[in-house]
Length: 415
Image 1 (spheres, rainbow, N blue to C red):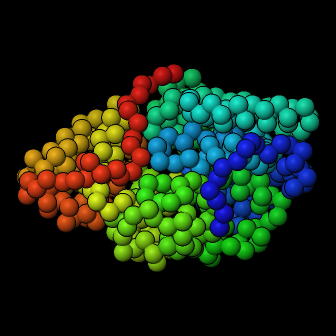
Image 2: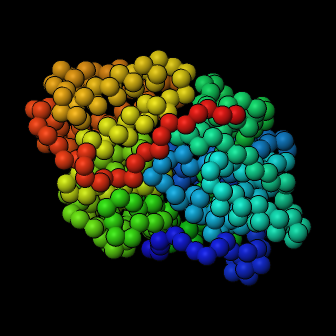
Image 3: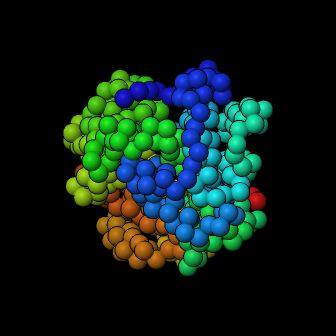
């Protein structure tokens, strides 16, 4: 386990090559190696990487597109921008291996506006690679609005095809018909960094750490009530207690934690010691997911109901405005939760919230409503004691006690 992720500057190409050697050429062999490695995507869904690549390979005939998704719209996460700021060539190596393997004629680096230092680092890294005349397709940077769902796969494809960074419902997957109707691999930056290492050292090497079902390491952003916030590289299968110890422990006793980011799951403080970061175990035993690798710890004295309401109100405002469950459902739930969080709402408001949660779930044009109501439902369960106080009209100090980093204000849909 290592961290937190900070540094004076990015690793230069010469140092990168001296440390790791030149990357091999990609090819069909790499899909097999990725299957052996058990690598899953680190963007949030944890989908087996080899399956994604195999889908693109089936439809590619030398005109596919590889997209490095480093947009990181999750407000609590900083792992991808830390990674591309410190180890850009490892990410770019992974993308070049993907291009070799899938017959892609171009690579696009998809980055949010506002991350200027990461953009400058990437421009310098691309210049180093051009000067070294590395054998790889041209790599260009495309900036996107810093919005929560601008990094969703179909939103990425829509933006790179000349539209806006909004999810787009389609019966065809991007592997078949993506950017400008070309087969497209949209892959998270951290996933491609792992590919850059697996391509050099193999699947068995990757499985030396982690568990049988969740091999390897992952980057985690620790924030909130921790002594040393930052980005940590963690072996999968590690106990949450060990992760917190690596960050110096908590500043104050923990009141709970949000695992996986704004689409994540709230965990009671009693779980923060022994829960292991095994993807399958988290899902089956706790109904949780690592998501984008966030562990946001809530301090004692703050209120999980208040924090979850703040996050939910932000997510409701981040709607792409394309379907009723998202536009109307999330807004109605947000209004009811704001009354509850202010201790002026009653049991009827809570009944409506649960009814609307059931009505919204599974009916959106994208996964945004599902992620929002899933996070809220876990908070209403974990923080039941606080919820009862709010429903009884009792005052809550959670509005005055600092909890998690605050969500950003609403932005705009720019092209």
